[in-house]
Length: 471
Image (cartoon, rainbow, N blue to C red; front, side):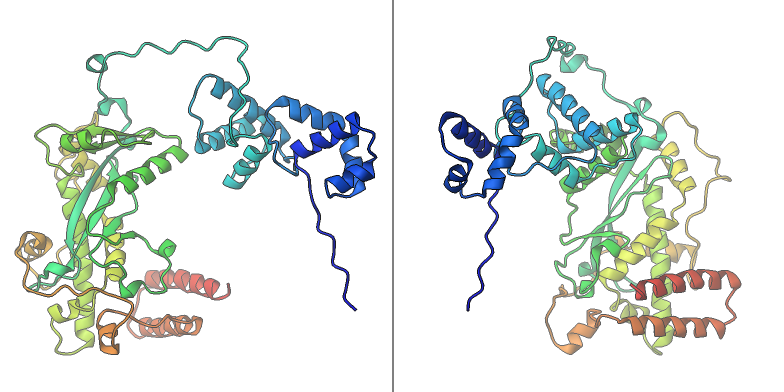
């Protein structure tokens, strides 16, 4: 015997509920007959009759979504109503209201009301559905008073241009696109070893933006199984920097912080990007005509490269000592793009804020300060052992040398076992592998007279790895 199928629930929209009320008023049909006509249950028709006044009020308000079938009330009704009132006023004044603007205003209203409320995207979507915002034509209430006339706009030639004096030093940023031979060793420079790194920091050195690395390889093998959110830097699968996308993200981040910042750029670049849409919180300031294109001081860029080269040499020397008879150039072949992201992030973190501050001031890119004296200026990366100052200086400036011959080899997701090993492809480590590696590292530290400070850092790392293993 077949089981009787459960009757499917059929909910009526606001427009259909009004039709039900009109049909009951204009005809002598019973509620059961009307229920059969609309293919719903009789109790649902009864509930519609009980809520008649509320349904008619929603229908006449012009703000309700007439196609919505259920209306779930918000837990924060006072914020809901206040935001809707502000929205109508904004639309009456012909403001271009956006989603981020509504989220910001909702948080502002919640703070004024003393409510602990953080609006989310999901809450905003439900608010728009409840109040018919963004569904077809908007019903804008007429303002009680005529809107204020807009302030007179000066002709472009009479508007005073923005300058550094209009921004605090913490809100003045500079950036530079730095070419970097990420695995070059002394005596080995390959044309295909180049990536481009985007550095950005404010003139006080107190805020360094997350670096962006652009490379030749679209899908490097070393990225297999790696979470991009866990990386200390961003990767773009083209050698050039996606400036439009990067600027949009920068503007969005500053908008969340409620800041207006200046980004220093070369005058031709500012003219080229002046028409970029959506930049509300980042103002592009042109440098003097005599300035070089990078707005990040050259001493800051060189300090970053020096720290990168020094850390790379340490890594290559460790590989060389492990494999007896291996040269630094041969050890550099094993450096992957993923290694470069970590090395670049570590090098950028090593650039001290004092150096950034003094460099901005020295080049006149920081408002209202005098350069630091040479004896107080922070030192750049120390010279690695085994190299003279001149040799290390040439190594830092490798990008200015002529690259050697070589065939570009892209990391892909297929290939033979030998190619996979050469390109740094490794199977994903398990939790057991991670715990064994911790034990091996601690044993190695115990056997080599490690300082107590290093053990404290190891304990922090060990605790975090064990926590992740328990997830």
